[in-house]
Each structure stands twice: as C-alpha cells, then as structure tokens.
Image (cartoon, rainbow, N blue to C red; front, top):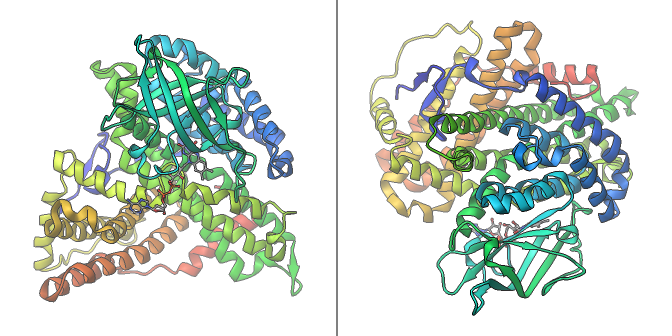
Length: 605
Ligand SMILES: Cc1cc2nc3c(=O)[nH]c(=O)nc-3n(C[C@H](O)[C@H](O)[C@H](O)COP(=O)(O)OP(=O)(O)OC[C@H]3O[C@@H](n4cnc5c(N)ncnc54)[C@H](O)[C@@H]3O)c2cc1C
C-alpha cells in the first residue's frame, strides 16, 4: 500500500485508514481561537463556582439543583452554543460546541448528562429536522433554558434494537392529531422536561416516526411518569419511565416525514456520540488533578506516594489516555466543522442538510471516539480510586462518585459493543460505495507480504521517523486482517461479531495513535522538541500500548479464521507490521510524563 499524503485536502470519514495528513493540517486544542479560549474559561469558571462546590448535593439526588443550574447555564448562553443566532443561540461552530460539552462535564456526570440530553438529543433533532415553524416555536425556548428537552426512544423491549419499539401513533378521524400510546424507559431529564422528542410507530410501518411532544405537568395530556430510577451513578440526573396514554399530538408536530424517525434517532446519536466523548474529557483532567494533589501530600514510608514508581506509572498512563482522547476528539470535531462549511459553500445543501451530512460523514470517527474516550474515563477514575487507597473508596473523596458516574458512558448513546460493530459496519458500507477505497490498498498489502521486505532505512534521528512507519504498517495490518476476513465472509461478516470487535479495536487504536503522533509533531515543530518532551513521550507511550492491543486483536482474529499457509503468512505479516526497530524505553517515557504532572501538581497538558 502506498498511503497517499494529502495536502490540505479534507479527508472523508474513514479515509484516515488509507490516507495520511501532514501534522500542520491537524487541528489541535493549541489552535483554539481567542473566542474559543474565552468560552472555555467562562465554562470552567461556571463549573468551578457553581457545580464543583456542590458536588455532595449531586450525590444526594438533588434533582432540583440540576434543574436550577441548567437554567443558569441557559442564562449564560451555554445551552445555545450550537443553536443558530436566529433562534436565540450563539451559532458557534462544531468545535466550540465540543469545547462546551468538554469543560461543562468536569465536576459531575449528573450535570453533564442533563446538559448532553438537553442540548444534544433533546434539541438537535428539531434544529436539524424541524420545519421553520417548529424551530421558531421551540428552539429559542430550549436554547435559553426556558424549557428543557428530553429524548424518548428506549422502551422496555427496544434498547439497542431501537427501531423495534412498540409505542403507537394513531391518526385521529379528523386527521388533525396523532394519539400516542406506549411506554418509554431510561429517559434522561424526564423529571423536569417541557418537551419530548418521542419515537412511535404509525400502523405497521417498517420504521418509527418522530414527534415533538409538549409536556406540562398541570395538564399532562395522558402522560404519566415513573419514579426516579435508583442508579449506580449520575445520581442527580433525572431518569424516569414515561407512559403515554392516548397523548394527543397535533399533526404539525411530526418531525420530518412519516417513517423517518429511525434516521433521526441515529443521526442524533451520531452527534451525541462525539459530544459524549468530549464530555468524558474534563472528568479525566479533574480526576488526574485531584489524584496528584493527594499523592503529593499523602506520605507513606516517609515518602509522598507520588514519588513511588507504581503511582507514577498510573499518572503517566492516565495523562496519556486523556491527552490522546482529547487530540482525536478535536481532530474529528474540526473535520466535521470543515465538512459542514464545505457543504454550505457548495451551495447544494440547506443549512440543515449541511450540518446533518457533515456529521454523518464522520460517523465512523464518532463511534471510535465514543468507545475509546468512555473507556479511558473508566480506567482513569478506577486508577484515581487506587491512588487514593482506602480514601478512594470513601464517599468523602470525589473518586468514588467519579468512578460511578463514568460507568454509564459505556452504555448510553449506543453501547460500546454496538458502536464497535457500527464503526466496522460503516467502514464496509463506505468501501462498498467507493467512498473509502480499502480494497486496492488491501490487495497491495497482500502482494507486499509475498515480496521481499524493503531494505530502505529511514533516518531514525528525525522525530517520529520510526513511529510514522509503524502507523503506516498498522494500517496495512488492519487492511490485511479485515480485507481477508471480508473476502472470506462477504456480508456475512456482520455475524462474526468477535472478528468485528477485534477489527474495531485495531481501528480505534490506529486513529488515536496517529492523531497523537501528529499533534506532538506539530507541537515540536512550533515549540522545539525539548519544550514539548512530555507530549512527545505521551505520543510514543500511547503508540507502544496501542501496538500491544493491536497485536492481541490481530492474533486472535488470524488464528480464528485462517489455517495452514494462509495463517502462517498472516502471522508473519502481523509480526512484520507491529515491529519496532528501536524499542522505546517506556519506563523512561512514563517518568518524563509523571515528573511534569508531579511538579505542576495538576494535569497540565
Ligand atoms: C442512565 C441512563 C440514561 C439513559 N438516557 C436515555 C435517554 O435519555 N433516552 C433514551 O431513549 N434512552 C436512554 N437510555 C437508554 C440507553 O440508550 C440504553 O440503555 C442502551 O441503548 C442499551 O439498551 P438496553 O439497556 O436495552 O440494553 P440491551 O440492548 O438489552 O443490551 C444489553 C447488552 O447486550 C448487548 N447487545 C445488544 N444487542 C446486541 C447485538 N446486536 N450484538 C451484540 N451485543 C448486543 C449490549 O451491548 C449490552 O451489552 C439511558 C440509559 C441509562 C442507563
């Protein structure tokens, strides 16, 4: 495979696998505009002043506090970042929207869930699919926090299989309204919402339809609520069942067309997924900062525990995952923003279509990020507890609630299993459509494997010379394994879930590892290698860890679906494509990272 290096060309979703970009073309948090930096500071200030000091109340199921602070967030404009100005929003771009999701989520998962459910899946379906009348009527109220939104898709028998819901919508004899009857469950913000995006089936339609349903507790229109669910985490995020008994909804409140609900649901979730990834970032930064402050003060064996190698290893790995997840999240966010702008410039799409198609283009990356960053935050909070020792297990420190709050991110917005399979399923679809040509490079890899390996030696003294070759090789490895599996099973591959999961693990690691190397390279070019040695160390450490994951996933796949000569050939390919010429000293890398965090007494990248 000769991976093409693009010059300033905007890659399509999934093309990162077969094309390369220059580090200068990677958007990173260092590129935030002044406006974005100001937004970040004001969100952080809000969280530090209003949310963090009240953390204990969030753990005591203080739903009213969540509602009160959501209203304040509305007054400050944070609920309307993604909403166009004509509907009383701030009309900021996708990167800014991500930035607000990121920094508003640092103190408690309760607030970030309420925020995400309202601004994302509760509001965006109307912004993206609503008629002008619907948008004028509802969006200003939602953008300012006068009203709150919820998203009612899941049912007792329809979870991951979201299109199988039993909720019915029946048209009245006079054709003026639909009557909705059914049961929804796990509805975030149900306890204080004024508007619901409800998915229901009309007659025996194949696909569900989406409706905007107003809710007024004084005049409930057949809507009743279950009690608040007793949950492991996000305890002050309202989560209830919602029952509809012949709830009357005017026909003009249908969102988009009949049967379009599943599409709306999936597109809303695509956007929700990448924002969820962002919403798992500041929680990690805060956990790292709280842990390092504790570890610098906690003395055992006459030594602050932050000085122990066992603890330093944890800090290095926690910080690395956080930084890498952040890098990949903002990379994809900027791609989405640019794609939307490009579609608008072309003039073919309406604003709504441009937004929708812009995000849809990067649905693979959205799934990758949802999975990776939700798992990073789980690992980070788990290590946070470990660093605090017994105190980590106590409700008196913020670690146990952070750990409990983190757990939900692997379940909602599509479970991580579903998202892993989606990422590969979507890639296959893109390949079939010719949007991402994986077949040509896959057969080039097959030829390369039977040929003599190149004896060309790069100049290893150049920063990341070796790592860049490895990234290229990991892409070849993905193409070798998935290309062979696809040839063998064709469309039946979808039924080989364990292979799909392994392929997805490889894909995720490649996207994150490449993003991190490019960010560190870009930083080094700007600041000099010495000044950013910690970021360089994180990019190298991450790649080293990624190779471990990829080797295991690759081996499990190869030995499960090949045999004989083919298996021997592919195992040889696995070895060749995961090979280092110069192994990094990973203890040294970890120490470089841990030293910096310990000195700064906070997460500082
Ligand atoms: C706190 C909380 C808040 C939520 N908020 C909302 C909300 O606001 N609105 C809303 O509509 N929903 C909401 N949900 C629902 C959430 O999106 C679902 O719980 C989630 O989609 C999973 O569905 P399920 O719980 O029915 O699990 P299931 O679909 O029953 O899945 C159970 C397990 O089986 C696996 N599985 C399922 N199908 C497959 C398959 N085809 N292949 C392989 N593995 C599979 C899953 O990955 C999972 O591990 C919320 C849930 C929670 C817990």
